[in-house]
Structures are given as structure tokens and as C-alpha cells.
Amino acid sequence: MQPVDLTTLIAAYSELRTTWLPARLEQVYQRDRHTIFLALRTLTGRGWLAVSWHPTAARLHLSDPPPRKPDTFTFSDQLRHQLGGLAFVAIAPVSPWERALDLQFAKRPGDPILWHLYIEIMGKRSNAILANADNQIVTAAHQVSEKQSSIRPILTGAPYALPPSLTDPIPNLTEPQSRWQERIALIPDALGRQMLKSYQGLSSHLVKAAIASAQLDFEQSTHSLTQEDWNRLFASWQQWLNFIQSCQTGDLSSIYPHWTETGYQVINWNHNPEPPDFKSVQDLLNRYYTDELNRFDFKQLRHQLSQKLANLLNKLRVKGQGFENRLQESSEADDYRAKADLLMANLQEWQPGMKAIGLPDFETGEPVTIPLDLEKNAVQNAQSLYKRHQKLKRARGAVEPLLATVRQEIDYLEQIEVAISQIDDYREPADLQALAEIREEFIQQGYLSDPEYKRQTQESSPEFYHFVSPSGFELLIGRNNRQNDVLSFRVATDYDLWFHTQEIAGSHGLLRLPPGAVADEADLQFAADLTAYYSRARHSEQVPVVYTEPKNVYKPKGAKPGMVIYKHERILWGCPQHFTPPT
Image (cartoon, rainbow, N blue to C red; front, top):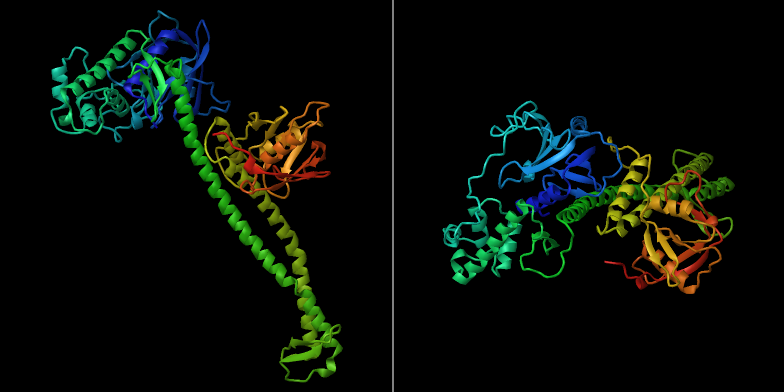
């Protein structure tokens, strides 16, 4: 993940200073351990400022509204108490060439500053610190004791101290090329590493972009550069310094937020005449870090759910196999009774000391060998066989419902397994939401424990898969069991058609039809193909798919999420290979 460097931070706070000051702080909300949102209102609008001290994604930018979840964090509560209703009047770096900003608050614009919210964007040492007008620390996102850092402890009641200053030279727009070139070429090494060692305020992403714009390579030796190469690189260096200077003076015209192959940049290094990918650095940072953090959370959550599911299914299948073995044994119950009857009918054939006796079968006349206990007579041996018959018969009555329960649970978990397998990569926020809903379902069903979990009183709107049939009808497909239930029992109307793979785990599909409309064969086949695609049989050539009216779909009492029964169904053969998923 690309970290916010000094150049990006200067561009971001310059935009904020130009367009969002002064503003009234209306609300403070903390989403997680690393991120708070400040609701700001100006004369022209309202927005949310995201402030994060995440160890790999520390940042400051305008954001989408935060999710509606309870905020139980102490840090945000203290910020609300001290800053609520005040005016956000200024934003400035705490020191030149430092990735740390001072957000200043007063009763109203022009009044004395009452509070400083220091945002330090420094990788693993990132922090957010609230200090009063006397610059005493009142609270901090991370308190640092003297044992943790003797150089710069961060403690409540202590004065706020600037981060330790760097010793590298500060870049200067007036420095002559000869001195700049001499400093970088002093030690023969890779060009990129020498630039990073020689000056403050540089990042690897910035240096790589500057070197690439000069048509050079990050790893090439400084001694391999010709004077023409140095001239081009110095021009890129000057372009960067001019960019910094223009942002600091409030000129935002040179900001060019755009994607790169490895992340993003805010400088138009190659003077591309095309419009930038984003209107502002705020939009760029919001999109990039939302996607990157969602992708990280997605991978973690999918791995957690997949591992838990695999363990559950493995245990259930072992348990089910044990029940099936016991049923196989109990199937021999009738055989024991038949042997007992045969022995009782031929008591005269028994002789003391016999280990086994061969008797003709009642129906076929074929000889049947019956093992005998030497210490028992014929009647006692027959009674033992009758007892064995009764025991196995009772076992069958006890095991059959247990096996049925295990099979139902396996079917349910395989339904979830299909849903997780279909969400194989992060493409949009709805993918992460679908996995979060599955995790919530796991917790509710008792498969996962989470002491911090609180069921949401207001459930978010499900993000179904959306498609359009050849005749223009909307086709909705659920991403998980919760969405399947919502689709089948809340969204569906009497005019729609409900689809599901026959006796195969998969998603529910709903073809939305206006009153009086009739789906033709192409629409039905389209719905069947996609329903087959979003099932366990995705890689098959043909899959049986049933469809019926939603009124014929029922949820048995006590059934788990996503499990239904249906009647009056018709069958189509879906061809999942006919569907090409979007990339």
C-alpha cells in the first residue's frame, strides 16, 4: 500500500485550507482504532474529514460519510467533549518538511486558538494528539510512555513536543544544479537510493516517478549518468520543488491527481494534456485508501471464514460418516432375527460343543451358518441373537434423525461455502459487505464467537448481483444466505419468477416482471444460466435449474438462513459457461 508522503500531504492540506476553512465542527465519529471522522459545515456545504493514524495508511482527506455503527471509543468521546461546536479555523504544518499538521480550533474565526489537533503521518509512529491553548497534551490516540520512548514520550499533561528533526539537507529551489548534482553523486550507488539519502521530504514513490520522468532508472549507478541525464533529472527536481511552493502559496493549478501502475501521484510529471483521473487530491485519497483497506479487510475476512468453514465441514463429514457406519451395522438387525428364528425352529439339530451350526434357509433352502457360543445352549444362543436384533433396531431409530440433522447442517454450510467461493476477489464495497453479512450469520448461528459483536438494529440494504435479461427485465441474485432470504421473502412479488439450482447449493435468483409481463424463452434461459453460474455447479456444462412463482417458495419452521422448500416447479437446463462475469 502506498503511504501518504510529504508531497501528497502538502497538496491535500492546501486544498483543505483553500476550500474548507473556516468550518464548524458538528460531529466527531471514530470508526475503528485508527480512524476518526470530523463532520465539517461551511457556508457552501457539509463534509466528513477522515483523519487516520493507521500504521500503513495514515492520511488526512475528505471522505464518504462513515458507517452507522456505535462509537464506543474514548478518544473520540474526548474530542467531542472538547471540540464539539467549535470553529475549525486553520491547518498548517507543525514544522517545514515534516509530515505533521496542526488543526486549530477556536470559538469563531478571528478568536484566540483554544485547541490544537496534531496529526502526525509517520508510518508506524503515526498519531493524533489533542493539546490545549497552552500546548499541553489532553489526550492522544496512542500514548507513548517513557519506557517506550525516552526521546519523545507522549503523555497526558505533558507539553506537546515536535517530532525529532531530521539531519538530512532541506531541498531548496535556489540551490544550483552543480551543488545538487555533487551531493547526489558523492557516493557511487543506485541513483534512487542516493536521492533518498541526500534530502528530506522524499519518498520512494516520488523519487521513482521523478527518475522515470527523466527517462532514467531507479537502480542505475550515479556514475553511469551523462550530463544530459543530470540535466533532465534536475528539471524534474525543479518541477517537484515548484509544485511544493505553488501548493504552499495556495496555487492549486499544478495539482494533477491520477492513477499510476503502482498507486497514485499528484504531479503531472510528463505534462499529460489529458484531464486528471480525479478532480481533487481528496477524491483520489478517499478512493485509493477505501479500496486498499477494504481489499485488506476482504482478504482477512475471507480467509477467516474459509478456514472456519472448512473445519466445520470436515468435522461434520467425519461425524456423518460415523453415523452412516452405525446405520450400516444396524441394517444387519433383520439378519440376526432371521438366524434366531432359524435356530429356534431347529433346536433338535443343536449338539453340545458346537461352535457353529449350518441350517437350511426357510425360503431358499440354502445353508446358513450360525456362529454359536459354546457356553450356551441353542435357546440361549437364539435369545442372544434376538437381543442383538433389538439393540441394532433401537440404534437405527436413534441414529437416523442424528444423521438427518448432520446432513441438513452440511447442506446449509455448503450453501455458505458456495457463496464464499463466488466472492473470490474484492472488486467493489458490496463484496466486502457480503462477506461481513456471512460473518454476522456465523456469529448468530454460534459458529463464531466475538465478544465485541453487537447485532445491528438497522440492517444495511443488501447489494444483490444485478443483471438485465434480453427483454430488459431485471434479474437479481443473492450474494449470501441473508440476501437470499431477503430476495425470496421481502423483495419478490407475485409477478416475479424465482430460480434455484435443483438439489445443488447455490444462490437464489429473482427475475423481476412488471404486472402483465411475460418472460420469453430467452429471458428464462438467461436467468437459468446465471443461477447455474452462481452455484456449486459453476464449472459444469449443463445444470438443472428449477423456477416457480415466489408464492410457491416456503421457509420451514426453524430452518437456517437461505434454506427453503418449493413446489409447482418447472425445470430448465442452465449453461453457466454461457455467462462471462464482469472483470
